[in-house]
Length: 164
Image 1: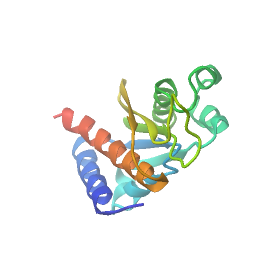
Image 2 (image 1 turned 30 degrees about the horizontal axis):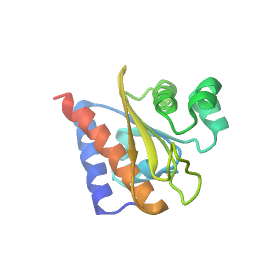
Image 3 (image 1 turned 30 degrees about the vertical axis):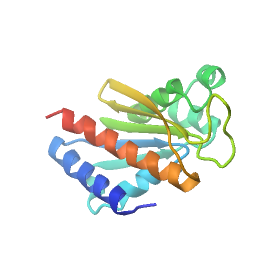
Image 4 (image 1 turned 60 degrees about the vertical axis):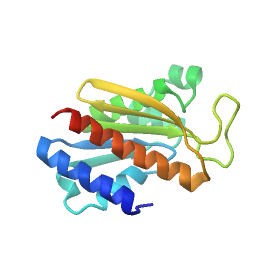
């Protein structure tokens, strides 16, 4: 999954993490570890990345990240509530200061009128501050996953840039 755009974003993130003495964690569903793959492709990433969770099933989201059954039942796995709980759980479990969580419908099946194929929720947490956003990425399964990885890396980088 690592192409030049993704590699460049991961290298930039690493430089920022070293500057800010920051460690990152990933909690991924539809990207299947693509963000962690991009990060670990960067030499020296062990200095700022220690843990990545691939929680594809709802059971894994609950067991590993502490996502509540109530949130999954009420909002579904692809929702703001769930990605916020995923990133909070990943940061708490790993001790990382900065985290990202991703849950979406990469396709080609699984979409609905409310959540069509390409719908991806992402959440980032920097310390105790969290933000989330929803995208509907165009393309086939690989293109949706690639776009989500890019947005995840961009979001972490933006949070570190905002630190000054």
